[in-house]
Length: 600
Image (tube, rainbow, N blue to C red; front, side, top):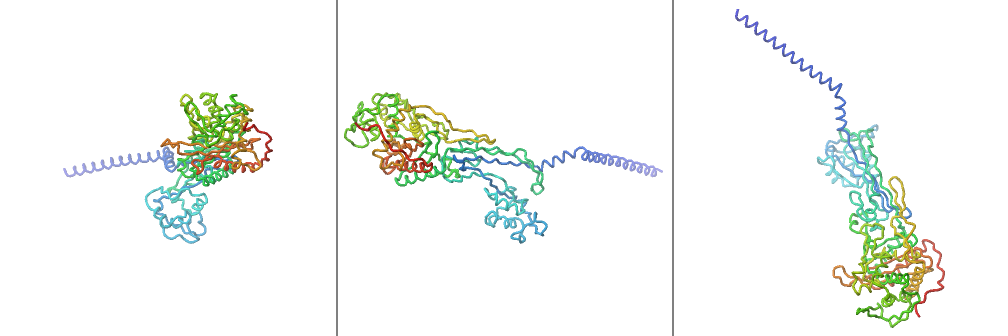
């Protein structure tokens, strides 16, 4: 009886456990069903969105840097499309070529119509190496590894990129659009154009000066990628278009620049000069037509960032070319008359300091025109006897000496013209014949151009116009200048400078069919380390044609084998002038019929 009761009790407990187990299982099942329903009905969008987000890639659309062109629109600097080719080494490890069957051209692989042997890195290298112009074995080594982004080659041209696309290996080999800076004229104007860095930012020259205008704004593109990393067709979306940089138009004429550079380097070679510079400026506008130096600077080489134009940065004592500025001040301030008589010895003593002319001569009877013609230091001092140090200083400043040009070129020097209160007894006298202060080629060219322009100084310009990325063009040329000298003074100076070229230097400085007004200079220059006068500057500034000025040309050489601006720099100036007159088909000059007397 007791056993029967125990059996009944055990059966009841078993049934009870079964029921509870069934309840628990049903509850768990219900919860799972509810969760599945929730996922299907409510959370499916969220998970889908998360999956889409994981597949979505954002890609930079690089903007092209703007262009630099010459005065005639010839491209001097531009950015061109290039590509970076990279490999997914992980995907390559499992790559297997697909045999072409005639109806799978978009996905199959072949080499010269034949199946691709091998697999993985070996197969990819066999297809890709000939296209990239790389050694097959070396490339195969670069394709092996665990890097998902292994750069294979940079600066690949679009034609090569299209050939890569035709290989049907986009699942393992990718390309990224980039830009690179191109300079179609090579080293021409290299020190002025300047250079960019790896980030495509201007770091020197015009590239730096106009960087904000030339720099573009990158855009962005999004797309979805498949499981093997390839772009899913039709998923590209341009979130922000790239905005390319603007355009800078220079005043430089590329043809003239080429000729000036050649003539300058030929002269450097002939006279074994350390370096040379030359500037050509339009008289009426202040436009710089050529800015040359003998340094060869390749703007595509990042080392170009370390070099800049000597025209903009080099300073020198002008020597006798500075005498013209002194005479300009004397005439303008009525300190002397053009035909005033001077008795000029070879040497003179002023307050215990002796000054002499460069070439020994007997006492001469000269006018101020004659003093300029023979380039007499003593005569210039005699003519300046009634001017104070302050007057001498202020007039040099008035002519632009010791000031910036306003061009805004990086690293431009303002020269060195210390205040007259700091001058000692000797310096206040040497400044009248171009020593005791340092100037730049830009300053001297513009000072002479002011004289040639009837006494009106124009703002010099290197950039003619700027065009924004939106297409708005703004001119950089100022039409109105500032009167510095009277027309009378300017006319008298032009007459005197024409007599210079008709005089002692007529055999070296001449222009077939054209009259020239100008002045030579030869000055001793102190070494920056030893401070001893151990260097020579030989220069010549010419204005052509003298009767109706179009251009001012300056040529300078450092340490030529012969210390004479007229002999060394003058002929080069003449060559450049002849080129310009022929290029512009300028009518020949009329004969000179009168001149200010040089002697009495």
